[in-house]
Length: 632
Image (spheres, rainbow, N blue to C red):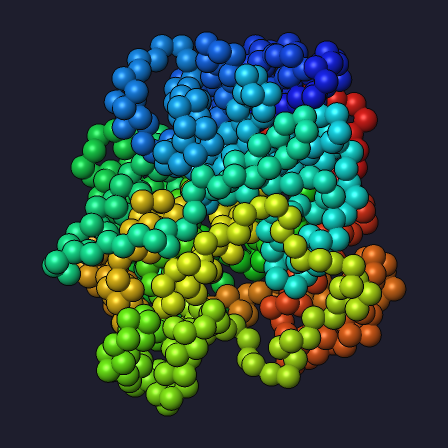
Protein backbone atom coordinates (compact mmCIF):
# COMPACT_ATOMS: atom_id res chain seq x y z
CA UNK A 1 0.00 0.00 0.00
CA UNK A 2 1.08 3.58 -0.58
CA UNK A 3 1.62 6.43 1.84
CA UNK A 4 0.37 9.94 1.13
CA UNK A 5 1.58 13.25 2.50
CA UNK A 6 1.40 16.90 1.52
CA UNK A 7 0.79 20.57 2.27
CA UNK A 8 -1.01 23.39 0.47
CA UNK A 9 -0.65 27.06 1.37
CA UNK A 10 -3.75 29.07 0.51
CA UNK A 11 -1.81 32.29 -0.15
CA UNK A 12 0.52 30.56 -2.63
CA UNK A 13 3.63 31.19 -0.54
CA UNK A 14 6.75 29.20 -1.45
CA UNK A 15 7.23 25.80 0.12
CA UNK A 16 9.82 25.93 2.89
CA UNK A 17 12.63 23.46 3.28
CA UNK A 18 11.16 22.29 6.57
CA UNK A 19 7.84 21.55 4.85
CA UNK A 20 9.60 19.39 2.32
CA UNK A 21 11.39 17.51 5.10
CA UNK A 22 8.07 16.73 6.77
CA UNK A 23 6.37 15.62 3.55
CA UNK A 24 9.30 13.36 2.74
CA UNK A 25 9.22 11.94 6.26
CA UNK A 26 5.53 11.14 5.81
CA UNK A 27 6.45 9.19 2.70
CA UNK A 28 9.33 7.41 4.40
CA UNK A 29 11.86 9.08 2.11
CA UNK A 30 14.87 11.35 2.30
CA UNK A 31 16.18 14.00 -0.08
CA UNK A 32 18.91 11.62 -1.18
CA UNK A 33 16.42 9.20 -2.73
CA UNK A 34 14.42 9.43 -5.97
CA UNK A 35 11.79 12.18 -5.79
CA UNK A 36 8.10 11.23 -5.78
CA UNK A 37 6.97 14.79 -5.03
CA UNK A 38 4.69 16.97 -7.12
CA UNK A 39 4.93 20.74 -6.82
CA UNK A 40 2.49 23.52 -7.60
CA UNK A 41 1.74 27.04 -6.51
CA UNK A 42 1.98 26.82 -2.72
CA UNK A 43 1.61 23.03 -3.07
CA UNK A 44 3.81 20.06 -2.28
CA UNK A 45 2.35 16.54 -2.33
CA UNK A 46 3.64 13.02 -2.71
CA UNK A 47 2.77 9.35 -2.93
CA UNK A 48 5.08 6.45 -2.28
CA UNK A 49 4.13 2.87 -3.04
CA UNK A 50 5.20 0.11 -0.69
CA UNK A 51 7.42 -2.75 -1.81
CA UNK A 52 4.25 -4.83 -2.31
CA UNK A 53 2.78 -2.46 -4.92
CA UNK A 54 3.54 -2.57 -8.62
CA UNK A 55 5.75 0.02 -10.29
CA UNK A 56 2.68 1.15 -12.27
CA UNK A 57 1.29 2.80 -9.13
CA UNK A 58 4.35 4.55 -7.71
CA UNK A 59 4.16 8.34 -7.57
CA UNK A 60 1.36 10.81 -8.28
CA UNK A 61 -0.76 10.91 -11.43
CA UNK A 62 -0.70 14.24 -13.30
CA UNK A 63 -3.25 15.45 -15.88
CA UNK A 64 -2.64 17.86 -18.75
CA UNK A 65 -4.56 20.63 -16.94
CA UNK A 66 -2.20 20.39 -13.95
CA UNK A 67 -4.51 18.35 -11.71
CA UNK A 68 -2.68 15.85 -9.52
CA UNK A 69 -3.88 12.66 -7.78
CA UNK A 70 -2.04 10.82 -5.01
CA UNK A 71 -3.50 7.32 -4.59
CA UNK A 72 -3.29 4.71 -1.84
CA UNK A 73 -5.08 1.42 -2.23
CA UNK A 74 -6.30 -1.38 -4.45
CA UNK A 75 -8.61 -0.79 -7.42
CA UNK A 76 -10.76 -3.84 -8.10
CA UNK A 77 -12.48 -2.65 -11.30
CA UNK A 78 -9.37 -1.34 -13.06
CA UNK A 79 -10.02 -3.38 -16.23
CA UNK A 80 -13.60 -2.11 -16.52
CA UNK A 81 -12.48 1.50 -16.20
CA UNK A 82 -9.68 1.07 -18.73
CA UNK A 83 -12.21 -0.30 -21.22
CA UNK A 84 -14.62 2.53 -20.46
CA UNK A 85 -12.09 5.27 -21.06
CA UNK A 86 -10.22 3.47 -23.81
CA UNK A 87 -6.96 4.60 -22.26
CA UNK A 88 -3.54 3.03 -22.64
CA UNK A 89 -0.98 3.75 -19.94
CA UNK A 90 2.76 3.62 -20.12
CA UNK A 91 4.65 5.39 -17.35
CA UNK A 92 1.62 6.99 -15.64
CA UNK A 93 0.45 5.56 -12.30
CA UNK A 94 -2.61 3.69 -13.54
CA UNK A 95 -5.04 3.76 -10.59
CA UNK A 96 -4.38 7.41 -9.74
CA UNK A 97 -4.88 8.38 -13.39
CA UNK A 98 -8.21 6.55 -13.56
CA UNK A 99 -9.36 8.21 -10.33
CA UNK A 100 -8.35 11.60 -11.73
CA UNK A 101 -10.25 10.94 -14.96
CA UNK A 102 -13.40 10.05 -13.01
CA UNK A 103 -13.07 13.21 -10.91
CA UNK A 104 -12.60 15.37 -14.00
CA UNK A 105 -15.68 13.92 -15.72
CA UNK A 106 -17.99 13.72 -12.70
CA UNK A 107 -16.52 15.74 -9.86
CA UNK A 108 -16.54 14.11 -6.41
CA UNK A 109 -19.63 12.11 -7.41
CA UNK A 110 -17.51 10.35 -10.03
CA UNK A 111 -15.44 8.69 -7.31
CA UNK A 112 -18.32 6.27 -6.64
CA UNK A 113 -17.09 4.35 -9.69
CA UNK A 114 -13.91 3.33 -7.84
CA UNK A 115 -14.41 -0.14 -6.33
CA UNK A 116 -11.80 -1.26 -3.81
CA UNK A 117 -9.97 -0.25 -0.64
CA UNK A 118 -8.56 3.22 -1.25
CA UNK A 119 -7.89 6.77 -0.13
CA UNK A 120 -6.78 9.62 -2.37
CA UNK A 121 -5.88 13.30 -2.52
CA UNK A 122 -6.63 15.35 -5.64
CA UNK A 123 -5.23 18.82 -6.31
CA UNK A 124 -7.65 20.76 -8.54
CA UNK A 125 -5.82 23.98 -9.47
CA UNK A 126 -8.58 25.25 -11.80
CA UNK A 127 -11.08 25.32 -8.91
CA UNK A 128 -8.46 26.11 -6.24
CA UNK A 129 -9.55 22.99 -4.36
CA UNK A 130 -7.97 20.04 -2.62
CA UNK A 131 -10.18 16.94 -2.46
CA UNK A 132 -9.50 14.17 0.07
CA UNK A 133 -11.61 11.01 -0.11
CA UNK A 134 -11.83 7.41 1.12
CA UNK A 135 -13.77 4.42 -0.17
CA UNK A 136 -17.15 3.58 1.34
CA UNK A 137 -15.63 1.35 4.06
CA UNK A 138 -12.71 3.57 5.11
CA UNK A 139 -10.14 0.77 5.03
CA UNK A 140 -7.14 2.91 4.01
CA UNK A 141 -6.25 5.68 6.53
CA UNK A 142 -6.11 9.39 5.66
CA UNK A 143 -6.02 12.36 8.04
CA UNK A 144 -5.91 16.13 7.60
CA UNK A 145 -5.62 19.43 9.42
CA UNK A 146 -6.78 22.78 8.06
CA UNK A 147 -5.65 26.11 9.50
CA UNK A 148 -6.19 29.69 8.35
CA UNK A 149 -3.02 29.39 6.26
CA UNK A 150 -2.80 25.85 4.94
CA UNK A 151 -3.98 22.26 4.61
CA UNK A 152 -1.77 19.38 5.76
CA UNK A 153 -2.50 15.69 5.25
CA UNK A 154 -0.95 12.29 5.84
CA UNK A 155 -1.74 8.59 5.75
CA UNK A 156 -0.19 8.36 9.22
CA UNK A 157 -1.92 9.93 12.20
CA UNK A 158 1.29 9.73 14.23
CA UNK A 159 3.21 11.58 11.52
CA UNK A 160 0.58 14.31 11.20
CA UNK A 161 0.51 14.88 14.96
CA UNK A 162 4.29 15.21 15.04
CA UNK A 163 4.30 17.50 12.03
CA UNK A 164 1.58 19.85 13.23
CA UNK A 165 2.49 19.72 16.91
CA UNK A 166 -1.24 19.34 17.67
CA UNK A 167 -1.06 17.07 20.70
CA UNK A 168 -3.94 18.70 22.61
CA UNK A 169 -6.65 16.15 23.37
CA UNK A 170 -10.04 16.42 21.67
CA UNK A 171 -12.62 16.08 24.45
CA UNK A 172 -15.40 15.21 21.98
CA UNK A 173 -13.33 12.21 20.90
CA UNK A 174 -12.64 11.24 24.52
CA UNK A 175 -16.33 11.35 25.46
CA UNK A 176 -17.46 9.32 22.48
CA UNK A 177 -14.70 6.76 22.86
CA UNK A 178 -15.36 6.30 26.58
CA UNK A 179 -19.12 5.90 26.09
CA UNK A 180 -19.38 4.16 22.71
CA UNK A 181 -15.96 2.65 22.07
CA UNK A 182 -15.46 4.73 18.93
CA UNK A 183 -15.60 8.35 17.81
CA UNK A 184 -16.94 8.99 14.31
CA UNK A 185 -15.26 11.80 12.36
CA UNK A 186 -12.75 12.47 15.16
CA UNK A 187 -9.20 11.65 16.24
CA UNK A 188 -7.78 12.00 19.76
CA UNK A 189 -6.22 15.32 18.70
CA UNK A 190 -8.04 18.61 18.40
CA UNK A 191 -8.28 19.96 14.83
CA UNK A 192 -6.97 16.74 13.23
CA UNK A 193 -9.67 14.76 11.45
CA UNK A 194 -10.05 11.48 9.55
CA UNK A 195 -11.54 11.59 6.07
CA UNK A 196 -15.10 10.16 6.43
CA UNK A 197 -15.72 6.93 4.47
CA UNK A 198 -17.71 7.39 1.28
CA UNK A 199 -17.21 11.15 1.51
CA UNK A 200 -15.09 13.71 -0.30
CA UNK A 201 -13.67 16.51 1.86
CA UNK A 202 -13.39 19.64 -0.31
CA UNK A 203 -10.93 22.20 1.03
CA UNK A 204 -10.64 25.70 -0.42
CA UNK A 205 -8.95 28.83 0.94
CA UNK A 206 -12.39 29.92 2.19
CA UNK A 207 -13.88 26.80 3.80
CA UNK A 208 -14.14 23.03 4.22
CA UNK A 209 -17.18 21.08 3.03
CA UNK A 210 -18.03 17.38 2.90
CA UNK A 211 -19.86 15.75 0.00
CA UNK A 212 -21.17 12.18 -0.06
CA UNK A 213 -20.36 10.24 -3.23
CA UNK A 214 -21.70 6.93 -1.82
CA UNK A 215 -24.50 6.24 0.62
CA UNK A 216 -26.46 3.33 1.98
CA UNK A 217 -28.54 1.67 -0.79
CA UNK A 218 -31.84 2.27 1.00
CA UNK A 219 -33.85 2.82 -2.19
CA UNK A 220 -32.62 -0.21 -4.16
CA UNK A 221 -34.21 -3.65 -4.47
CA UNK A 222 -33.01 -6.90 -6.03
CA UNK A 223 -35.71 -9.49 -6.69
CA UNK A 224 -35.30 -12.80 -8.55
CA UNK A 225 -38.05 -15.15 -9.66
CA UNK A 226 -36.14 -18.21 -8.46
CA UNK A 227 -34.72 -18.42 -4.94
CA UNK A 228 -31.70 -20.35 -6.19
CA UNK A 229 -30.59 -17.28 -8.14
CA UNK A 230 -29.77 -15.51 -4.88
CA UNK A 231 -27.40 -18.32 -3.86
CA UNK A 232 -25.71 -18.35 -7.26
CA UNK A 233 -25.19 -14.59 -7.23
CA UNK A 234 -23.88 -14.63 -3.66
CA UNK A 235 -21.34 -17.32 -4.55
CA UNK A 236 -20.23 -15.38 -7.63
CA UNK A 237 -19.82 -12.10 -5.75
CA UNK A 238 -17.98 -13.75 -2.87
CA UNK A 239 -15.60 -15.48 -5.24
CA UNK A 240 -14.92 -12.11 -6.85
CA UNK A 241 -14.43 -10.52 -3.41
CA UNK A 242 -11.69 -12.99 -2.53
CA UNK A 243 -10.10 -13.16 -5.99
CA UNK A 244 -9.52 -9.40 -6.35
CA UNK A 245 -7.70 -9.38 -3.00
CA UNK A 246 -5.26 -12.19 -3.76
CA UNK A 247 -1.89 -10.90 -4.97
CA UNK A 248 -0.49 -12.34 -8.20
CA UNK A 249 2.67 -14.41 -7.81
CA UNK A 250 3.07 -13.55 -4.10
CA UNK A 251 1.99 -15.15 -0.81
CA UNK A 252 -1.16 -14.04 0.99
CA UNK A 253 -2.14 -14.57 4.62
CA UNK A 254 -5.57 -14.99 6.18
CA UNK A 255 -7.25 -15.42 9.54
CA UNK A 256 -8.70 -18.84 10.35
CA UNK A 257 -10.87 -18.95 13.46
CA UNK A 258 -12.99 -21.97 12.59
CA UNK A 259 -16.08 -19.80 12.11
CA UNK A 260 -18.06 -19.61 8.89
CA UNK A 261 -16.62 -16.28 7.77
CA UNK A 262 -12.87 -16.92 8.00
CA UNK A 263 -13.30 -20.54 6.86
CA UNK A 264 -15.25 -19.41 3.77
CA UNK A 265 -12.49 -16.98 2.83
CA UNK A 266 -9.74 -19.56 3.24
CA UNK A 267 -11.60 -22.29 1.35
CA UNK A 268 -12.50 -19.91 -1.49
CA UNK A 269 -8.90 -18.68 -1.73
CA UNK A 270 -7.75 -22.31 -1.92
CA UNK A 271 -10.22 -22.98 -4.72
CA UNK A 272 -9.02 -19.96 -6.67
CA UNK A 273 -5.36 -20.90 -6.16
CA UNK A 274 -6.01 -24.40 -7.52
CA UNK A 275 -7.69 -23.04 -10.66
CA UNK A 276 -5.50 -20.04 -11.53
CA UNK A 277 -1.77 -20.11 -12.16
CA UNK A 278 -1.48 -16.36 -11.38
CA UNK A 279 -2.19 -17.07 -7.69
CA UNK A 280 1.03 -18.47 -6.27
CA UNK A 281 -0.28 -20.77 -3.54
CA UNK A 282 -2.91 -21.33 -0.90
CA UNK A 283 -2.90 -18.59 1.74
CA UNK A 284 -0.90 -18.99 4.93
CA UNK A 285 -3.41 -18.95 7.78
CA UNK A 286 -3.21 -17.64 11.34
CA UNK A 287 -5.30 -19.01 14.19
CA UNK A 288 -5.68 -17.36 17.59
CA UNK A 289 -5.75 -19.87 20.44
CA UNK A 290 -6.72 -19.39 24.07
CA UNK A 291 -7.63 -21.41 27.12
CA UNK A 292 -11.13 -22.87 26.95
CA UNK A 293 -11.56 -22.20 23.22
CA UNK A 294 -14.23 -24.25 21.47
CA UNK A 295 -12.89 -23.33 18.03
CA UNK A 296 -9.98 -25.76 17.78
CA UNK A 297 -11.89 -28.75 16.41
CA UNK A 298 -13.39 -26.56 13.67
CA UNK A 299 -9.99 -25.14 12.77
CA UNK A 300 -8.69 -28.69 12.44
CA UNK A 301 -11.60 -29.57 10.16
CA UNK A 302 -10.52 -26.82 7.77
CA UNK A 303 -6.84 -27.82 8.08
CA UNK A 304 -7.71 -31.41 7.14
CA UNK A 305 -9.78 -30.30 4.18
CA UNK A 306 -7.03 -28.05 2.77
CA UNK A 307 -4.12 -30.30 3.87
CA UNK A 308 -2.26 -27.39 5.40
CA UNK A 309 -1.71 -26.43 9.04
CA UNK A 310 -2.37 -22.98 10.42
CA UNK A 311 0.12 -20.91 12.38
CA UNK A 312 -0.99 -20.47 16.00
CA UNK A 313 -0.83 -17.30 18.09
CA UNK A 314 -1.50 -17.82 21.81
CA UNK A 315 -3.69 -14.95 23.03
CA UNK A 316 -2.25 -15.23 26.51
CA UNK A 317 1.11 -14.33 24.96
CA UNK A 318 -0.32 -11.78 22.49
CA UNK A 319 -3.32 -10.51 24.45
CA UNK A 320 -6.29 -8.24 23.90
CA UNK A 321 -4.32 -5.36 25.44
CA UNK A 322 -1.12 -4.87 27.42
CA UNK A 323 0.00 -2.15 29.82
CA UNK A 324 2.68 -1.00 27.38
CA UNK A 325 0.72 -1.61 24.16
CA UNK A 326 -2.64 0.23 24.33
CA UNK A 327 -2.31 1.74 20.85
CA UNK A 328 0.14 4.09 19.18
CA UNK A 329 -1.23 7.40 17.94
CA UNK A 330 -4.76 6.38 19.03
CA UNK A 331 -6.09 3.86 21.57
CA UNK A 332 -6.52 0.42 20.00
CA UNK A 333 -7.14 -3.16 21.04
CA UNK A 334 -5.00 -6.16 20.10
CA UNK A 335 -1.72 -4.23 19.94
CA UNK A 336 0.47 -7.23 20.94
CA UNK A 337 -1.25 -9.49 18.41
CA UNK A 338 -0.96 -6.95 15.58
CA UNK A 339 2.72 -6.38 16.33
CA UNK A 340 3.43 -10.12 16.17
CA UNK A 341 1.44 -10.50 12.97
CA UNK A 342 3.47 -7.68 11.45
CA UNK A 343 6.70 -9.42 12.45
CA UNK A 344 5.61 -12.72 10.92
CA UNK A 345 4.31 -11.07 7.75
CA UNK A 346 7.72 -9.48 7.25
CA UNK A 347 9.31 -12.89 7.73
CA UNK A 348 6.96 -14.45 5.17
CA UNK A 349 7.22 -11.54 2.74
CA UNK A 350 3.47 -11.05 2.40
CA UNK A 351 1.67 -7.82 1.59
CA UNK A 352 -1.93 -9.08 1.96
CA UNK A 353 -3.89 -10.18 5.03
CA UNK A 354 -7.51 -11.34 4.64
CA UNK A 355 -9.87 -11.04 7.63
CA UNK A 356 -13.44 -12.18 8.21
CA UNK A 357 -14.59 -8.80 9.50
CA UNK A 358 -18.15 -7.75 8.60
CA UNK A 359 -19.10 -11.34 7.79
CA UNK A 360 -21.57 -11.71 10.68
CA UNK A 361 -23.36 -8.54 9.62
CA UNK A 362 -23.40 -9.05 5.86
CA UNK A 363 -24.38 -12.72 5.94
CA UNK A 364 -27.34 -12.25 8.29
CA UNK A 365 -26.05 -13.84 11.48
CA UNK A 366 -29.00 -12.54 13.48
CA UNK A 367 -30.58 -14.15 16.52
CA UNK A 368 -33.66 -11.97 16.16
CA UNK A 369 -34.70 -10.47 12.83
CA UNK A 370 -38.38 -10.30 13.72
CA UNK A 371 -38.37 -6.78 12.31
CA UNK A 372 -39.26 -8.47 9.03
CA UNK A 373 -42.84 -8.36 10.33
CA UNK A 374 -42.72 -4.55 10.23
CA UNK A 375 -42.42 -4.56 6.44
CA UNK A 376 -45.60 -6.61 6.16
CA UNK A 377 -47.36 -4.07 8.38
CA UNK A 378 -46.08 -1.14 6.31
CA UNK A 379 -47.65 -2.82 3.26
CA UNK A 380 -50.89 -3.32 5.29
CA UNK A 381 -50.56 -7.11 5.18
CA UNK A 382 -51.71 -7.73 8.75
CA UNK A 383 -52.17 -11.49 8.46
CA UNK A 384 -48.68 -11.96 6.96
CA UNK A 385 -47.22 -9.81 9.74
CA UNK A 386 -48.94 -11.93 12.38
CA UNK A 387 -47.60 -15.14 10.81
CA UNK A 388 -44.09 -13.67 10.64
CA UNK A 389 -44.19 -12.60 14.28
CA UNK A 390 -45.54 -16.02 15.30
CA UNK A 391 -42.66 -17.84 13.56
CA UNK A 392 -40.10 -15.63 15.31
CA UNK A 393 -41.82 -16.01 18.69
CA UNK A 394 -41.56 -19.79 18.39
CA UNK A 395 -37.91 -19.65 17.37
CA UNK A 396 -37.01 -17.17 20.13
CA UNK A 397 -39.32 -18.84 22.69
CA UNK A 398 -40.86 -15.51 23.66
CA UNK A 399 -44.51 -14.32 23.62
CA UNK A 400 -45.79 -13.03 20.29
CA UNK A 401 -47.28 -9.80 21.66
CA UNK A 402 -44.03 -7.92 22.38
CA UNK A 403 -42.80 -8.80 18.90
CA UNK A 404 -46.01 -7.54 17.29
CA UNK A 405 -45.92 -4.33 19.34
CA UNK A 406 -42.31 -3.72 18.33
CA UNK A 407 -43.22 -4.31 14.69
CA UNK A 408 -46.11 -1.84 14.94
CA UNK A 409 -43.87 0.84 16.47
CA UNK A 410 -41.23 0.23 13.81
CA UNK A 411 -43.70 0.27 10.91
CA UNK A 412 -45.72 3.35 11.86
CA UNK A 413 -43.32 5.55 13.82
CA UNK A 414 -39.69 6.69 13.32
CA UNK A 415 -38.62 4.50 16.25
CA UNK A 416 -35.96 1.93 15.30
CA UNK A 417 -35.02 -1.00 17.56
CA UNK A 418 -31.41 -2.09 18.11
CA UNK A 419 -30.05 -4.82 15.88
CA UNK A 420 -29.98 -8.14 17.75
CA UNK A 421 -26.88 -9.73 16.24
CA UNK A 422 -26.26 -12.22 19.02
CA UNK A 423 -26.06 -12.74 22.75
CA UNK A 424 -24.19 -10.01 24.65
CA UNK A 425 -20.94 -10.90 26.37
CA UNK A 426 -22.13 -9.59 29.72
CA UNK A 427 -25.17 -10.14 31.87
CA UNK A 428 -27.89 -7.54 32.13
CA UNK A 429 -27.95 -5.88 35.51
CA UNK A 430 -28.51 -2.63 37.31
CA UNK A 431 -24.91 -1.71 36.48
CA UNK A 432 -25.36 -1.91 32.70
CA UNK A 433 -25.90 1.87 32.36
CA UNK A 434 -23.11 2.96 34.72
CA UNK A 435 -20.38 4.79 32.80
CA UNK A 436 -18.45 6.72 35.52
CA UNK A 437 -18.03 9.82 33.35
CA UNK A 438 -17.91 13.05 35.35
CA UNK A 439 -21.03 15.18 35.07
CA UNK A 440 -19.05 18.38 34.45
CA UNK A 441 -17.22 16.67 31.60
CA UNK A 442 -20.47 15.56 29.94
CA UNK A 443 -21.84 19.12 30.15
CA UNK A 444 -18.94 20.31 27.99
CA UNK A 445 -19.62 17.77 25.23
CA UNK A 446 -22.02 18.28 22.33
CA UNK A 447 -21.81 14.83 20.62
CA UNK A 448 -22.44 16.61 17.30
CA UNK A 449 -20.99 15.54 13.95
CA UNK A 450 -20.52 19.01 12.48
CA UNK A 451 -21.11 19.37 8.73
CA UNK A 452 -20.73 15.67 7.81
CA UNK A 453 -23.97 14.60 6.05
CA UNK A 454 -25.99 12.03 7.98
CA UNK A 455 -26.39 8.67 6.31
CA UNK A 456 -29.80 7.85 4.86
CA UNK A 457 -30.70 4.89 7.07
CA UNK A 458 -33.98 6.57 8.16
CA UNK A 459 -35.24 6.31 4.56
CA UNK A 460 -35.01 2.51 4.50
CA UNK A 461 -38.03 0.24 4.80
CA UNK A 462 -39.00 -0.18 8.49
CA UNK A 463 -37.72 -3.75 8.81
CA UNK A 464 -34.34 -2.76 7.36
CA UNK A 465 -33.68 0.48 9.26
CA UNK A 466 -31.83 -1.28 12.08
CA UNK A 467 -29.41 -2.94 9.67
CA UNK A 468 -28.72 0.22 7.73
CA UNK A 469 -28.23 2.23 10.90
CA UNK A 470 -25.81 -0.38 12.27
CA UNK A 471 -23.77 -0.44 9.07
CA UNK A 472 -23.66 3.35 8.92
CA UNK A 473 -22.35 3.52 12.48
CA UNK A 474 -19.63 0.93 11.76
CA UNK A 475 -18.50 2.76 8.64
CA UNK A 476 -18.50 6.19 10.28
CA UNK A 477 -16.32 4.83 13.10
CA UNK A 478 -13.88 3.39 10.52
CA UNK A 479 -13.97 0.02 12.31
CA UNK A 480 -12.58 -1.66 9.16
CA UNK A 481 -9.52 0.59 8.90
CA UNK A 482 -6.14 -1.11 8.89
CA UNK A 483 -4.52 -1.03 12.36
CA UNK A 484 -1.46 1.19 12.71
CA UNK A 485 1.00 -1.71 12.85
CA UNK A 486 -0.31 -3.14 9.56
CA UNK A 487 -1.04 -0.05 7.48
CA UNK A 488 1.91 -0.75 5.19
CA UNK A 489 0.19 -3.88 3.81
CA UNK A 490 -3.21 -4.62 2.31
CA UNK A 491 -5.23 -5.41 5.45
CA UNK A 492 -8.50 -6.24 3.76
CA UNK A 493 -11.94 -7.78 4.28
CA UNK A 494 -13.65 -9.80 1.50
CA UNK A 495 -17.03 -9.49 3.22
CA UNK A 496 -16.72 -5.71 2.88
CA UNK A 497 -16.49 -5.98 -0.94
CA UNK A 498 -18.90 -3.25 -1.95
CA UNK A 499 -20.85 -5.16 -4.65
CA UNK A 500 -21.32 -8.03 -2.17
CA UNK A 501 -22.51 -5.73 0.62
CA UNK A 502 -24.91 -3.87 -1.64
CA UNK A 503 -26.32 -7.15 -2.93
CA UNK A 504 -26.97 -8.56 0.54
CA UNK A 505 -28.58 -5.31 1.69
CA UNK A 506 -31.00 -5.12 -1.22
CA UNK A 507 -32.31 -8.69 -1.49
CA UNK A 508 -35.36 -9.69 0.59
CA UNK A 509 -34.25 -9.98 4.26
CA UNK A 510 -35.95 -13.36 4.51
CA UNK A 511 -33.54 -14.81 1.95
CA UNK A 512 -30.57 -14.18 4.25
CA UNK A 513 -32.07 -14.97 7.66
CA UNK A 514 -35.15 -16.82 8.88
CA UNK A 515 -36.33 -17.98 12.32
CA UNK A 516 -33.78 -20.51 13.64
CA UNK A 517 -31.91 -20.16 10.32
CA UNK A 518 -29.29 -17.42 10.59
CA UNK A 519 -27.01 -17.22 7.53
CA UNK A 520 -29.61 -19.20 5.60
CA UNK A 521 -28.46 -18.01 2.16
CA UNK A 522 -24.78 -18.30 3.00
CA UNK A 523 -25.09 -21.93 4.04
CA UNK A 524 -26.97 -22.75 0.86
CA UNK A 525 -24.55 -20.89 -1.42
CA UNK A 526 -21.41 -22.34 0.18
CA UNK A 527 -22.67 -25.92 0.61
CA UNK A 528 -20.02 -27.33 -1.75
CA UNK A 529 -17.24 -25.05 -0.53
CA UNK A 530 -17.05 -25.67 3.22
CA UNK A 531 -16.31 -28.82 5.24
CA UNK A 532 -19.57 -30.19 6.73
CA UNK A 533 -18.49 -29.40 10.31
CA UNK A 534 -18.14 -25.71 9.39
CA UNK A 535 -21.25 -25.53 7.23
CA UNK A 536 -23.46 -26.79 10.05
CA UNK A 537 -21.80 -24.87 12.87
CA UNK A 538 -24.36 -22.77 14.76
CA UNK A 539 -22.25 -20.81 17.23
CA UNK A 540 -18.76 -19.45 17.67
CA UNK A 541 -16.42 -19.34 20.64
CA UNK A 542 -16.41 -16.31 22.92
CA UNK A 543 -13.40 -14.18 23.80
CA UNK A 544 -14.97 -13.07 27.11
CA UNK A 545 -12.52 -14.89 29.38
CA UNK A 546 -9.59 -13.84 27.18
CA UNK A 547 -10.61 -10.20 27.48
CA UNK A 548 -10.88 -10.51 31.23
CA UNK A 549 -7.46 -12.11 31.71
CA UNK A 550 -5.84 -9.35 29.66
CA UNK A 551 -7.64 -6.58 31.56
CA UNK A 552 -6.94 -7.79 35.10
CA UNK A 553 -3.34 -6.44 35.19
CA UNK A 554 -4.55 -3.03 33.97
CA UNK A 555 -7.37 -2.87 36.52
CA UNK A 556 -5.04 -3.98 39.32
CA UNK A 557 -2.49 -1.31 38.38
CA UNK A 558 -5.15 1.43 38.28
CA UNK A 559 -6.53 0.46 41.69
CA UNK A 560 -3.07 0.30 43.27
CA UNK A 561 -2.57 4.05 42.68
CA UNK A 562 -5.95 5.75 42.17
CA UNK A 563 -4.41 9.21 42.42
CA UNK A 564 -2.27 8.47 39.38
CA UNK A 565 -5.23 7.96 37.03
CA UNK A 566 -4.97 10.21 33.98
CA UNK A 567 -8.73 9.96 33.44
CA UNK A 568 -9.27 11.65 36.80
CA UNK A 569 -6.55 14.24 36.22
CA UNK A 570 -8.22 15.24 32.94
CA UNK A 571 -11.61 15.46 34.66
CA UNK A 572 -13.14 12.73 32.48
CA UNK A 573 -14.35 10.32 35.19
CA UNK A 574 -15.63 10.30 38.73
CA UNK A 575 -13.00 8.72 41.00
CA UNK A 576 -15.41 7.10 43.42
CA UNK A 577 -17.48 5.51 40.65
CA UNK A 578 -14.57 4.17 38.62
CA UNK A 579 -12.70 2.73 41.61
CA UNK A 580 -15.89 0.99 42.79
CA UNK A 581 -16.38 -0.53 39.35
CA UNK A 582 -12.76 -1.66 39.09
CA UNK A 583 -13.14 -3.37 42.46
CA UNK A 584 -16.31 -5.13 41.31
CA UNK A 585 -14.57 -6.18 38.07
CA UNK A 586 -11.69 -7.79 39.97
CA UNK A 587 -14.23 -9.55 42.21
CA UNK A 588 -16.07 -10.92 39.17
CA UNK A 589 -19.21 -8.86 39.85
CA UNK A 590 -21.42 -6.84 37.48
CA UNK A 591 -19.78 -3.55 36.52
CA UNK A 592 -20.84 -2.83 32.89
CA UNK A 593 -17.62 -4.49 31.78
CA UNK A 594 -17.84 -3.63 28.04
CA UNK A 595 -17.76 0.10 28.78
CA UNK A 596 -15.21 -0.34 31.59
CA UNK A 597 -12.88 -1.86 28.99
CA UNK A 598 -12.91 1.49 27.17
CA UNK A 599 -11.92 3.32 30.37
CA UNK A 600 -9.04 0.92 30.95
CA UNK A 601 -7.73 1.18 27.40
CA UNK A 602 -7.97 4.97 27.32
CA UNK A 603 -6.28 5.32 30.71
CA UNK A 604 -3.20 3.37 29.65
CA UNK A 605 -3.12 5.03 26.26
CA UNK A 606 -3.01 8.38 28.10
CA UNK A 607 -0.17 7.10 30.27
CA UNK A 608 1.82 6.01 27.24
CA UNK A 609 1.05 9.28 25.53
CA UNK A 610 2.28 11.25 28.54
CA UNK A 611 5.46 9.20 28.67
CA UNK A 612 4.68 7.28 31.86
CA UNK A 613 5.09 3.84 30.32
CA UNK A 614 6.71 4.56 26.96
CA UNK A 615 7.24 7.99 25.47
CA UNK A 616 8.33 7.01 21.97
CA UNK A 617 6.21 6.27 18.94
CA UNK A 618 7.65 3.51 16.73
CA UNK A 619 8.06 4.35 13.06
CA UNK A 620 7.23 1.26 10.99
CA UNK A 621 8.56 2.78 7.77
CA UNK A 622 12.20 3.24 8.95
CA UNK A 623 11.97 6.73 7.48
CA UNK A 624 14.24 9.70 7.87
CA UNK A 625 12.73 12.15 10.35
CA UNK A 626 13.01 15.89 10.58
CA UNK A 627 14.49 17.10 13.87
CA UNK A 628 12.51 18.27 16.88
CA UNK A 629 9.50 15.98 16.79
CA UNK A 630 6.52 17.04 18.88
CA UNK A 631 5.68 14.39 21.47
CA UNK A 632 2.44 12.53 20.86
